[in-house]
Length: 169
Image 1 (tube, rainbow, N blue to C red):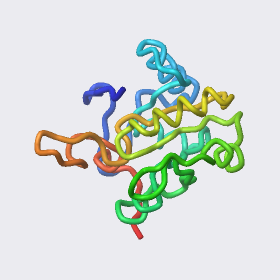
Image 2 (tube, rainbow, N blue to C red):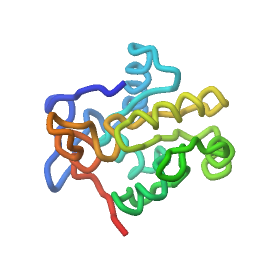
Image 3 (cartoon, helix red, strand yellow):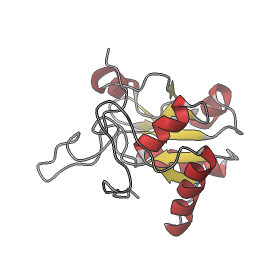
Image 4 (cartoon, rainbow, N blue to C red):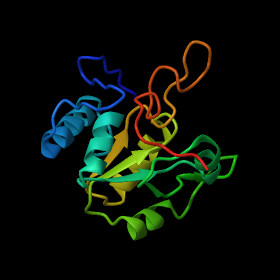
């Protein structure tokens, strides 16, 4: 489910994040097209830099679906809303996920779901879309990104690798 984007698709520098377009509708349409091409069961998938741009501009809500433990020990995105898809270190599915998501965000706003690598957030996006959330997107690569050849995260992709804002308690 993770797409690989090269530097011609998304570029960044330490001072400015660049996106393919600054038109929110174009960004969301491209994410929807990605979902259609890949036969995903939710609205769309979006790269981290474009996700942050939409959140920063007030065009979408970022929901972190990781556990409390992950957020505390690994870090979290400022301005994100937390609704855990799974709980605890054993990752038990949160039976209240959809109810909490509806309560905290609602079903009609564009929602961007973020997890560690983009896999749990894709599962959460599928569940939310099936439950009637109209605009639910998966943030590709997740917060920490994929494992590299040495089985390490935060090396090849992910929110933190793109140098997007994050905090740690």
